Every structure is written in structure tokens, then in C-alpha cells.
Length: 206
Image 1 (cartoon, rainbow, N blue to C red):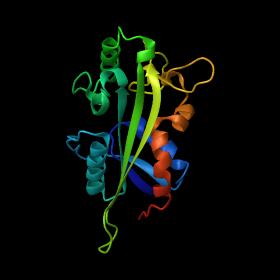
Image 2: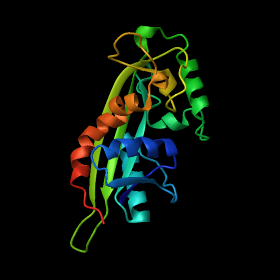
Image 3: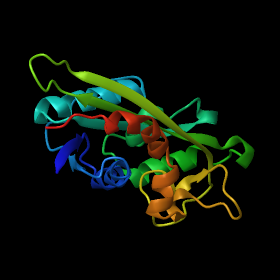
């Protein structure tokens, strides 16, 4: 089976991307990246996704995917945004990030708790021959919703337990209460992947 590297050390993301990729390219195995982490000094999701994908492709020689994603809260001017993983400090403590965000929104009423999960996926295909060139693509997916006042559910990761997506029928649930299949079908990454799927369909692999 051919491989494509996902520029992350997070096993949850590898599993999530494998499930999504398999729908279009069941012959592709998504593998995690075990090389050095580049400095993510971009100011946008797209810049950081490209930084990571370029590093993974250069280190492994494989086509590389990188996702830079986060939660963008309207009343905070789009923050945490690109700082979502480090919102409570550089330890990347997901529980601390979530609790800090809830604390910052403590006095914000429900109508003003709107937010979006944003995923930007970069695909970098390294040169496969002397006559070819490195190819780069960037796609984006946006998942609108709002933030609950307390975490609920044991599923997902990161900010999932406080994110309530728009468009739910009946009782609204946080993503922490969704099944993995439900999330993979509707998430910001799934939406970004809809744009990426045609590119992967034609992806040349060794």
C-alpha cells in the first residue's frame, strides 16, 4: 500500500485523516510524521499548514498532508485562531486551553457565543523525477456553530466538548457527544477534504 505522511505527532489526527482519505483513496495509508518539528511562525492557518507539509515532504520524500486548524470565536475577533493549540501556554494542554476559553467567555450570553472551527489542509507532493516539480495545494473548510457554557461528552479532542455545530435537528449536542463517524462526515476537516479529494484522486505515488 502506498503511503502519504500526515505532518502531525497526534495519533487522533492520523486516525481521523485515515478514515477520511480511505473514502477516496483506499490504497493510501496515512502515516504519522516522526521527524523534527518545524517552527510554525506563520500568521495564518494556510502559512502554518504549508510550513508543516513542506517539512514532512522534505524529510520523508513522501507526499505530505498538513492540517492547521483551530477555533475562531467571533466575540474574540477570531481568536484563538492559529494559537488554538497554545491558548493556555506552550505545553499544548488541551484541557487548560478549553478551560481558559470558557473562562474568557464566562459573561458572554448565548447569542454572542458564535464560533467556527476552521481547517486548512496543505498537500505537498515532492519531485518524483528530475523533470517534475514540487506541487503544492491549499484548501479550507469552515464549520460554523457556537460555544457551550460547559464541556459535555467524552468523544473528540481539543475544543470538541464545547463546540455545538449549527444545523442540528432536535437536541443540540457538542461534538464531544458525536460519534467518530458523525464528526468525520461533517467536520471542518471533512469540509476541507471535499476540496482536497479531487487532488488526491490524481495523486501520483511511488
